[in-house]
Length: 204
Image (cartoon, rainbow, N blue to C red; front, side):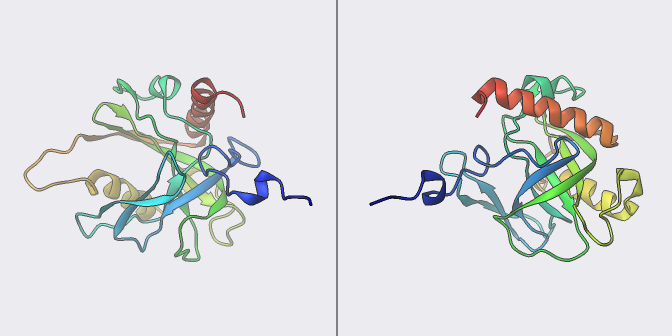
C-alpha cells in the first residue's frame, strides 16, 4: 500500500513552510492574519502555525487593509541596521499590508503582493517595519509601483492605525513613526529580513 507524501498529509507552517514569494523582493507572498473587518487581533502561533486570538482590539480602530507577514523573513540584526533608533529587530516575520480594490473578508490565506513602499516604525526600541504592497493583478491598484501613487488617504489611515491601535488611555505609546519610504527601501528591508531568516533558521 502506498501513502501520500508528508507534503500532502500535513499543512506547511505558514512562516517556515511557504516560499518568500514568486519574485522577491519585488513580488512576495503575504500570509493574511487580519482583514479590515476584524475587531480581534489575530496572529499565527509560532509553534503550531495555527491562527490564534492574540487579543480583542481595545479601540474601534480597524486595520485599513489586509495585514499579515512575509514567509521566511525575520526581523533581526540586518533589519535593525536599516531602522533609525532601533536597538534590535522585533524577532517576528516582516509585517506587510496589502491594498486591494475588492474587499477580502477572510484570513488564513496567502496571496501575491507587489511591494510599493514601507512605513518604518520603532516599537519599544524594536524595528517594526510595515511593508506596503498592492494585490498583484488588482484591477484598480495592480499597476502601482510606488507608495506615492497610492491615494494619500490610504497611507494616512495606515499611519494612524499603527500609531493608535495599541494606545491605552493615560499611557504614553512606545510606537514611534520613523518615516515613509518608497519601493527601493522596502525591498532593501525585505532582502535584509530574508538574510536574517536564513542566518537564524538556516536554508530550507
